Amino acid sequence: DQQVKQNSPSLSVQEGRISILNCDYTNSMFDYFLWYKKYPAEGPTFLISISSIKDKNEDGRFTVFLNKSAKHLSLHIVPSQPGDSAVYFCAATTQTGANNLFFGTGTRLTVIP
Amino acid sequence: DGGITQSPKYLFRKEGQNVTLSCEQNLNHDAMYWYRQDPGQGLRLIYYSQIVNDFQKGDIAEGYSVSREKKESFPLTVTSAQKNPTAFYLCASSERQGNTGELFFGEGSRLTVL
Image 1: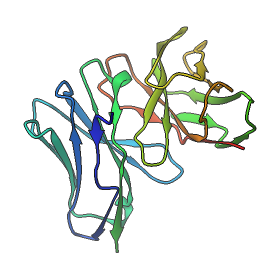
Image 2 (image 1 turned 30 degrees about the horizontal axis):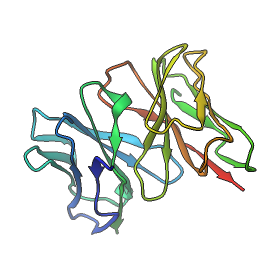
Image 3 (image 1 turned 45 degrees about the horizontal axis):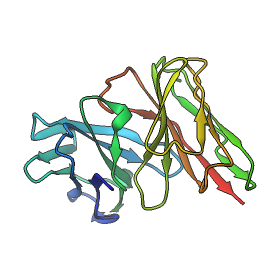
Image 4 (image 1 turned 60 degrees about the vertical axis):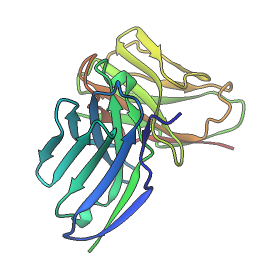
């Protein structure tokens, strides 16, 4: 049973516009959420995270929003750049940490120049 | 440069053979992990180790074995008991137990069973 879901396998956005990647989860015990970015033939790299005590976390062009009541989080990239083209994984965990990290299936973002 | 090195990058195996994937890190991290990625699925945890000489099963440990004799090394053996071993395997590490999920990943090893 997939506890973390990314329902859009792919997304295309024009350079300079906003990219919005969505993620839903089912387990109300999750209290820490992360986004990872993966280029082809490379391992995922950590991008940004958010604790359940917040509803927004911002890091440069990347902002993650958390809606606990809807069990939904989203990653906004503004402005989108061609170098952002990659697969983005959403992940969630409880306070016990990385050994119970649950990943979504990923969304492939393509930023068109 | 600090990081995680996985080898080999590509591996072909005949059915019935065991194969070992190497994972080495020089980040001085205590915890190490093995994940498996299949098309259309998220990463799934195979095994993890929080300290030398100790490791725990993840969600899909059947058909796999690991060892953690050194802090830097966490090799994964895919045994003949693994029914569907063709996949992309990712090794990761983190600073300490209880780390909130910020993992450092290797570049992965793609295993194909012929």
